[in-house]
Length: 322
Ligand code: FA5
Picture (cartoon, protein in one colour):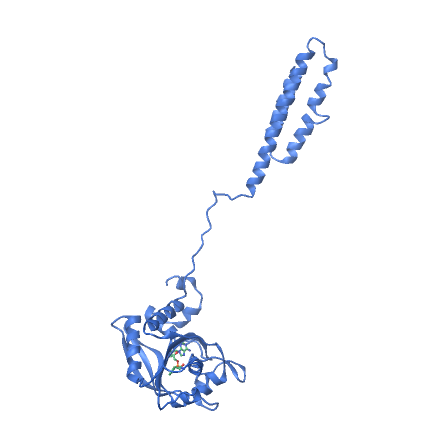
């Protein structure tokens, strides 16, 4: 009977050390296996005095049951903890996700679209990779014209360029649609400009075009004034200066005053008769105005940003402010 107690004590001592499946298997072999201590003890029965044999036998049976039960329990515990390893540890600190947000230029472009949409303008789109014809020729800028040098760009082939302005969308729309036309076309444009505080080699414009019977320069001024008030508030002021574009006559540039400073925003003018002729619109019957506004410049003025390059640096400290 002492032997039984001893086996039991040894078993539980070993069992308390078990933390891996191999250790558990060792435990089983050592105590419950074919040559294990329990089996060994059973073989003692035949040498034991017949009077105490039944007590020893039933003691051994009880021992075997108890050890087997404990073995099963340990096995279950190990299996459970193996499963837990694949599960989420809810005590770890969480991973923070940063919700995305609109780039400030996209926000301004959306505001511009909303404002002109509310004025009854449609919103059009055109390719960023343009033909020489749409970017220059159809806009009354022939090959030898000095205005080409001012808008020097990247040529893909002799006839295919990265567009230097959004004005080619005017031509594409007028080719497809009869007047009255009232549209804007926002998008990205490219020029071989050296970067500085107000110039980037890629930037964004929104083209505007209105064609109808008896459209005047006064209409242009009124719409731009109304736009400036909606975008910057009632204190904003607009000033037009004479300028030159081959595709408008007369031509102008306009600046907006806001937050204590003037900023050149846009070129504009009355659509040149040659442009109308190139798309088959009768300049004797129809007139129109057009403008090409720098979206980046509008954003700089509105948010009081002094360097255009900040928009393209991808610095989260800057971008998170909007
Ligand atoms: C044009 O691009 C004409 N297509 C505008 C136009 C349209 C005139 C329709 C008449 C009728 P300009 O090169 O001036 O014009 O550019 C227009 C505006 O784009 C500028 O006023 C300025 O706001 C912006 N801009 C021009 N170059 C850059 C640049 N490198 N970086 C950022 N903004 C620029």
